[in-house]
Length: 121
Image (tube, rainbow, N blue to C red; front, side, top):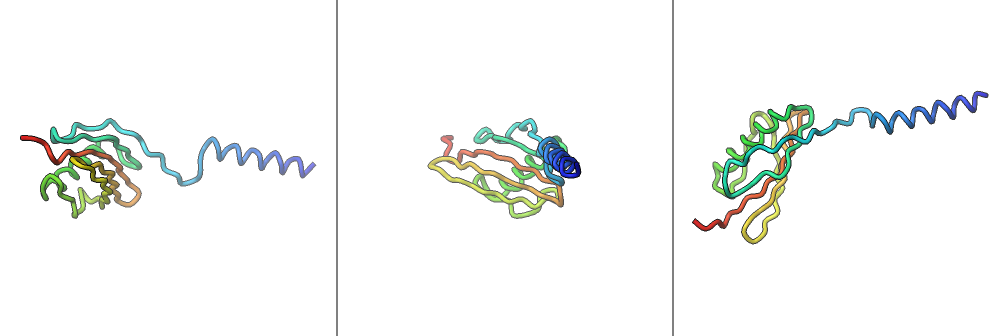
């Protein structure tokens, strides 16, 4: 009888893990993408963990401002509104695509963008 109770209890615990998910796992909300500040680029995706979508959009815009202070293809090397940001870029012939992750303790903002750098004037 104890064996049956153990099996049923174990099965219940496993079922709850599938429904609830692992303890401590944070869900990233997909946020509406803000308007890109330049006609030469666009945001692809914006995700927020432990932060509101409004704050995530604010961080995305602040990162753009920081990055473009060093030119159109510049990089941001300072904290953005207290968040440390890491950028990974893939450069192609006339544009680059990037994924940026900004973190401040448990708060996390992840965004992707594309920037054309050879635009005819």
